[in-house]
Each structure stands twice: as structure tokens, then as C-alpha cells.
Length: 176
Image (cartoon, rainbow, N blue to C red; front, top):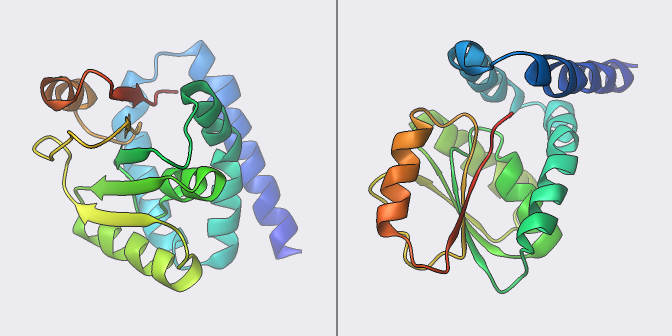
């Protein structure tokens, strides 16, 4: 019963935000509020298995499209900036491609939460979680760099990335 209700809530939330609100409105005014709500939700939800399960399911289709678009494979190295307390993007990319992933977050609690989640629930994944905002991180060895929607100052982060990456490296910015 609880699983069914939780699943329906995630499905409704996803459809409402990604399919109804995002296409109709400029999302910039809502970004700070949405960021805060996601951070709060993830910090609580990362400790509840059923929430993690449905959170991953909510991102599954998005991640699948990004993997196919970028043609990510096992041989590649991925950097993900803004992974959060529930590292859905690193975890799903790792599960689907077996690529080596470094995930960054500037929130120490998010790094601790996601590290614990990976260690306790997904120990076989090839993911390293580190504390960083990504702006000063070495980016020479990565094939793809994802800048997730929750990253504050996305444009500033992208500018720093483009100053440091190889010509072959591709940056992917997630937006609604």
C-alpha cells in the first residue's frame, strides 16, 4: 500500500514538473525554491529505501536518453557536478554503462549521505564521490562532464569547465 502510494506520488510529481510546468513557464524564478526542496527531500529520502527506489525510477528515462544521446560506454570516464544526497545520475549511468564516474557535490552532508548510500546499498558501482563545486576541479581526464540542474551558478560553472577541458571532452548541461 505504501509502495503504491509512494510510486504514484513520484509519478505525479515528475509529470507535473517536467511535463506540465516546465514547458509552459520560465523556470528561472522557481529554480532556487526547487533546488531547496530537492536538497531537503534528498537529505531525508536518502535514508528511506522506497524513496530511493522511486527517485531512481523518476530519473531513469532522462538518464537513458542522455546516455544514448552521448553514446556513453564502459571505456569512458564521466564527471558529474551536483550529484546530491541521492546520486541518481551517477548511479544510473554506472548501472547502465559500467563507466568510471567521479561525482562532485559542494555540500558536505550530501557527500556523506551519497557515499553512505552507495557503500551500503550499491557497493559494486564504479563511483567515487568527492566534495567540490567543480569550478576548480581537474577536468583533463574526462570524456563527459555533466552539470546537473541543481548546480548553483550553472553558467559560471560551465565557463570554468570550458577553460579546462580537452577538445574531445563534451559537457552536458541538464535543464528542465
